[in-house]
Image 1 (cartoon, rainbow over the protein chains, first blue to last red):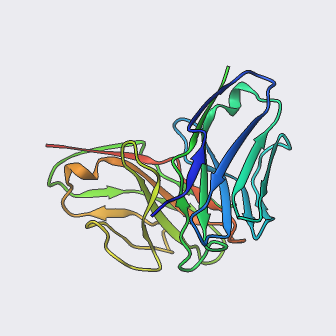
Image 2 (cartoon, chains in turn brown, purple):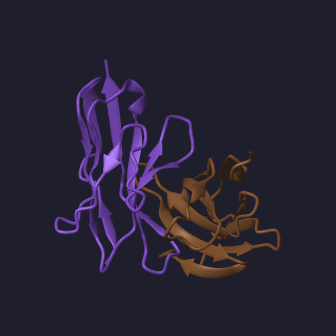
Length: 115
Length: 109
C-alpha cells in the first residue's frame, strides 16, 4: 500500500536559486497540503489544494507557489531561495478538506538545505 | 487567533511511569484536536483525535473546553513510546492543521 511519496528526499541549493518539490498523494485522495518544518518547530502550513484549486494559503511570501495536477499530484515551488528556507518540507494528502473523520497522511518529507 | 501550545520541549520518564504530555489551545468555537506522533526515522502519523474518543497504544486524551486543554496521557510508559509528539488542531476553514512545537518523550528503563 503506497503512502504519500515525495521527491527528492534531500536537496542542496544556493541562495537565490529556485527549487521544485514533488508530491504524489495516496490513490483516491484529492487533497494535498504542504507544510514547512524548521528544526525544533512543529510543521507550519503553506498551502492546501483540493480538486486542483488552491483552497488555503498560510503566512508565506509570494516566493512560495504550488499547483495540483489532474492526477492530484502536486508541486511546491520556491523562488529566490533564502538561507531561512532551509527546512523539511512535508506533503500531506487526504480524501478531502480536513474535518470530521478525514485524516491527513504525511509523506517522509524533502530536506532542503540552502547554502 | 488559532494557536496550539505545548509547554514542554522534553519529557523524560522511566518505563512503567505515568505520562502526561500537555497541550493547550486557543480557538473560537469547537475545535477538532489531534495528537500526531513521529517515531525515529518514520513519517508523521496520526495517533488519536478527540472526536473518536479511542485509546490508541494505551494513550488517551480528553478535551477540556473549560481549560482549553487536550493533554495526552498513558498510565504506564513503554520504551517504544519514545518519540516526538505534536498536538494539532484544524483551522476553521478546514484547510490546515495548526501544530504545536512538539514534545520529545524519552522513556528509559
